[in-house]
Length: 439
Image (cartoon, rainbow, N blue to C red; front, top):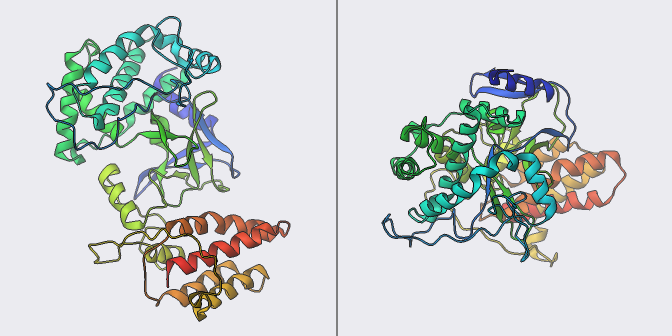
């Protein structure tokens, strides 16, 4: 089967359709009803590397002098699941390069992809680590990913007997937009330096040009994914390239699906956050949607080169959009956003500020919803009316996060009338939201 047909086959298997959209160009919609929590797609990434210590974060103290070697830290995460390596760690018995946290991860990685990558792994890692010393740690993940993706594309070009998912990802990679002309000049200069290093090395295939490498880096820069652990605070564990997910799913600050990296089997999955109707667009978030609107828009425009017009960001009079705007630290015309006020939740409910009329009105509206005396939409409207003219102050985004996460879920469970724990969760979420957001 020609690779050009692989995406169509994949869409049919996953019950998805790509349709045209005047504002976005295209969008992916469900071809059937999808239940909350259901896996929409699950596929191995085109390429991925674990996070290296000291790489990927801004480092203003490092020199730009390419002649000054900058130490490269050894890999300390599993090649398969990206978790921290134990003291005793299995290695591939053939290349002796890839390291794993367990024999299970070693076997899973071999069965998935290492059997066709092993032969080139040792030379690739040695050369990559040597080249990495010549660039700033901030850009080393881009070097590693570029070399990895080039290797994957080269394997497909040589028509090796590769699994179908690998050829699917390659086909999707070739269709991604690089936005090369939109990238800042300083980024293009850094990408050009990386391209020069790769072209001078023994890792550059004959078909590869410097222009190809710069284009690949631009393409990865605005189409990459990351994996995270469950520690506190959450830490990034790996850099991932999954062109099929990038190609299919648009961004929304109120997404109905999310991207996850499954440590078991090394799959990248997109799962439904809400029930999705047939014909409804499936969206994921490219950024942290708990950030205020102005910061979300700045990041999306700078990294992904578009202005979000989702239901939270679009100008309009919906109560969700109005509340999102009110929660923003940076108000219209304000060039100096306020600082976060990360105080703990109130414990003294006898505080005068807690019994002000507007607080009582908010709580009364919530209780009316719980007693089926008022709809949730009416409560949203009345709460908005009660607080819209109050003086704004700095926001506790922990409270806003609690409110966003609890609101719909609590109401769903309240309608079933079976779990009174959700009654108090919903009361608390709106109560804290009202107290911390506007006063």
